[in-house]
Image 1 (cartoon, rainbow, N blue to C red):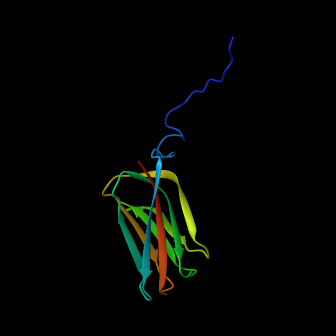
Image 2 (image 1 turned 135 degrees about the vertical axis):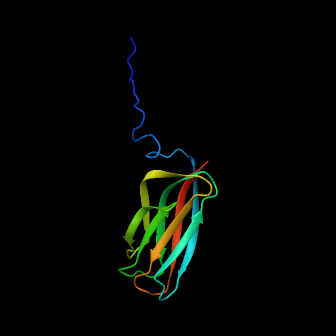
Image 3 (image 1 turned 45 degrees about the vertical axis):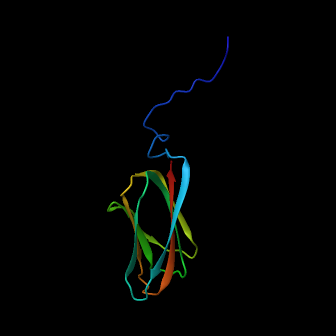
Length: 129
């Protein structure tokens, strides 16, 4: 008599999309934004060019000011709101893999509450085929 471990799987749990990614290959799109002194905001609009999953975003600034913050929207739906900048670059890993198709729009709004000039570097981190 052989002994073994029997594993049962219930679909629709934490191992299924969107909680678990379905694409195997990393792809990172980096952008640099110039924030002009006195401007209330700077916006980066990225148009997705391939089927992919957005899994995280990383952001860094040439200077950090206490009131500056940022939002992120996918196709107009806000998924990150009012995240304040810190003294170090920040990576935000999502709890789900956001499924994207060509033509989808990712909008990052950097709200320049300090009104100071700065550079902002953003990395959109995807998985793709």
